[in-house]
Length: 72
Image (cartoon, rainbow, N blue to C red; front, top):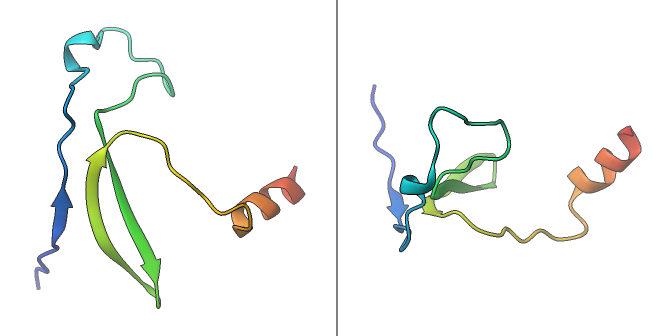
């Protein structure tokens, strides 16, 4: 069975494609113009979006920060 997902797409106003050197793509230093984001709630992923690459805000109380600190 194929499920259709509703994905909202917001295109970037300025592409960096012409600045990209495809012969030299170091890991963690070359990024796309867009990123995929989704929310996880009630045991499922929802509110799918493709948005322009940019900053992300996080609550300082997220467990990933606290357990990440404890791990190291």
